[in-house]
Length: 124
Image (cartoon, rainbow, N blue to C red; front, side, top):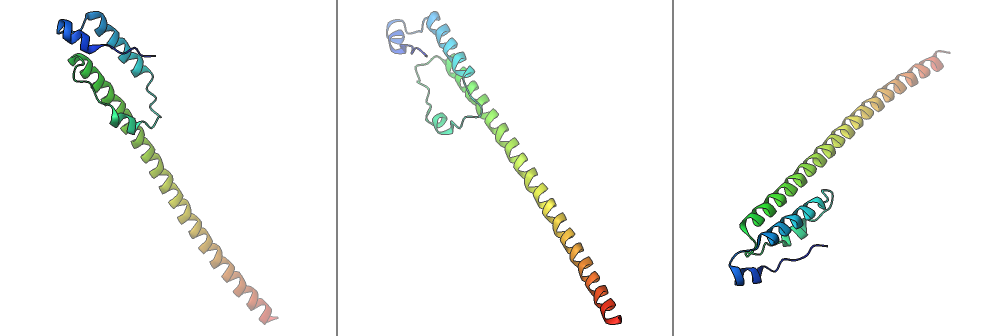
C-alpha cells in the first residue's frame, strides 16, 4: 500500500530529505487523498492522526490542507443532511396539521349530518 519514508536517516545523514523521497511523499499524499471517502465516519481516526514533526514543512502544509478540505466537505455534508432532516420535519408537521384540520372538518360535517338525520327522524 503506502511505503513509509525513513525520515530519521535523512535527517541524520544530510539534515535534509532527498528530492526523490519528497516526491514519493507527495505521491503517497495524493494516493491517500484520492482514497478518502466523504461518506465514511472517520472522525475518531482523524482525531488520532498526528503529524511527525520531522516531516517537511511542505508535506505538513499539504497534509493539513487536505485534512481541512476533507473536514470542510464533512461539514457541508452534515449541513445538507441537517437541512434535509429539517425540511422533512416541517413537511411532516404541515401534513399533520392538514390532516388534523381535515379530521376536524369531517367531524363537524358528521355532527351536522347526525343532527339533520335526528331532525328527520323526529319530524316523521
